[in-house]
Image (cartoon, rainbow, N blue to C red; front, side, top):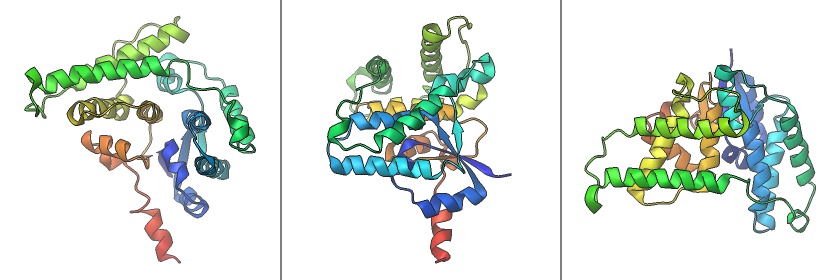
Length: 264
């Protein structure tokens, strides 16, 4: 049986046709609906023709893998909650985003200036995460200390409670006929641990949480029953190492890239 590799959006800007095609022989490459949404949303962020060309390349790489890759249907929390709440997921959204990206890729930078901007609730989500990181800063730097003396102080239980609150918000918005959550399933470990690492990293390094951080973390909600997580985003790699989950990181440099180079 093939090992399963979940990709995030950052991967598709750098992979090549040869690498992904070779990987498909031994690995089951998985692409979430959220990754397609992120690529579509990225059209609102490009600032010049070169950035647009990079984005077009990423989309072309995703489309190149359509026959081999597994596309995971559902928005992040829908997909995450489905096994425990029997949420019905429509395949129409996934088809819509595929068609939308196929349409975007045919247009120039000037023609795409009318693409809708930020998703409706991202600012609210970002604010909630930023406030939570502020709480961690007070815990890790008591009484305004310049260095933390509690680096081994666990905040994971607090992060789990935060994640449960955020998921209950989602349930109340769109699935109010489901009961509220009081605990997280076992397959939440990657998401919750990296979310905890993000809060701690933000507090210790005094850096902001960005929309990109939120979107890439949400992609981890699809990590269920998989073997590896593939990201090329330096911050996500750092968070996985901080969470001591770097054994789940797929490194094409250590695996297929070297194998491909030896075969040349």
